[in-house]
Length: 418
Ligand SMILES: [Zn+2]
Image (cartoon, rainbow, N blue to C red; front, side, top):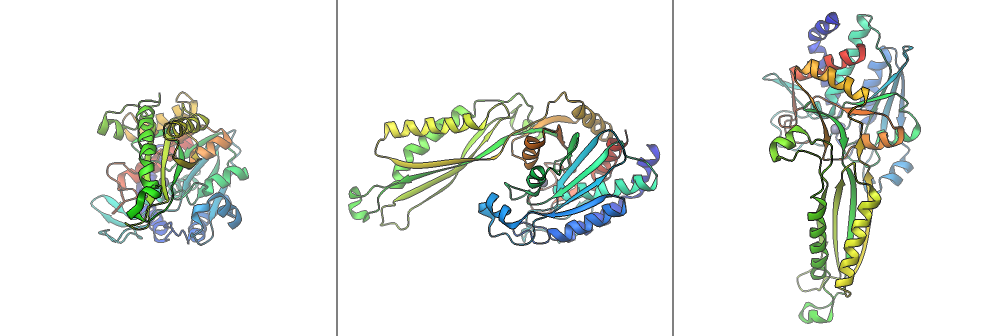
């Protein structure tokens, strides 16, 4: 083990070079056009290490059926499955995504290459989530050179469209049965906490229907925007009740420190409003949209029922309001038992390598990992490289500390060989 850890230190430049190769392939989505090239690069590396490698493209018809809002995306939705059977008793599934969010013109360094500066590596995707892939490739090649066999058979799934969703490459792999394993490590996380839970996500839409008329005689029409006010008031009342609930799962350290909120909480948001065509026309429609994040202790049917109850109240109090509504579960919540032996193992290795108590926490956002876990029932831990308050994930000048990248290769090394 000592030899492996020292060897990993000496391979830092190589890890950065591998990461640079991945960052230079522009997999920003939208449009997500170069997935195939990213998979070829990662696949070549893993094939050389003895993995059985398969590139799987999600059929266009399936992609469009499952992601009706993503029809504008072009290019093959390519994903990689790489398996190594070392004759171990248990199999470990390791996953992350190779798509990234686009870069704004405000970057101070070129986004699609790695710039090393002041102990940090800058580049789009270094934290979310190409750094993990580079660390994994270095670790596996170091283990192979030192002739150290992993304690698990490995099932590596590198997938795409996580940044768009809802039906990402990982969801497709889950449905294809490509995620067979005993344990699940998602590298799509940060290094602040080990994420073992996340909120589920429901998208909702309410259409308030009115009747258009000349605004000079607006009393002869039905103003859909004005009629949407009681709907919004009722939703705000529902929001207040929902947001009083708390999960038993601890919130992330960053959230607790910033807000004092100690455990995961549900939220209801109105995030879009659309109505009207002109100042002098009574609007005949007002569309409200939003999302509802629900904690692992809640379920989709209850979330749906809350909506139905709130909207029936509006209908009863305002019989003149005509409204249509719909809601869809985008992701289920994720919850891995915090006492599961796999969680203990990941935590003890992370504690050891980071030299601190790495907490187990839930994410307020929603993850495609939750879909995979819903299908496979695997115990899952998400742990990655970036730091939430420093890495600028999804923002300008995304970066990681070089020492965090090296630490992550060591984390993987200890996890696979202890
Ligand atoms: Zn990510």
